[in-house]
Image 1 (cartoon, rainbow, N blue to C red):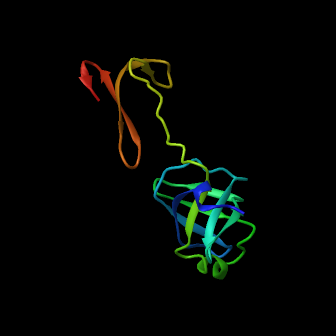
Image 2: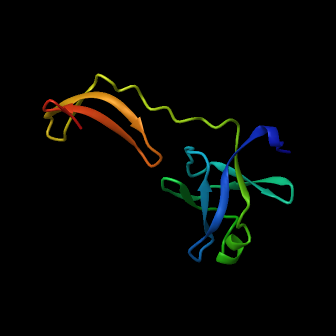
Length: 134
């Protein structure tokens, strides 16, 4: 039996997506989710594993399909259910790229990476290019 202390909450099921049983999970935490992994849904006080059979990621949500949910009605019944992963949430660490040289797809030097900035939707690099920060 899975115990609450073995899990970390990552969000909740927001709504169905399409008619084949896929659903949207609103994420509180950015986590790496892969096909074949399991998420745990809290249903009637128990944590039930659901396999990830398809997944499409976006900045603040994922669209997931599982063989255990096959219709829009079944997905609708999961609205509001809390979603967990097993173990601690692995916080994404951006590599320390400061000082590296950014090169474009034609192998031309753009400039030195001065800083990595974290924004809610993405990370951005500050690059010294032609004597200016970009």
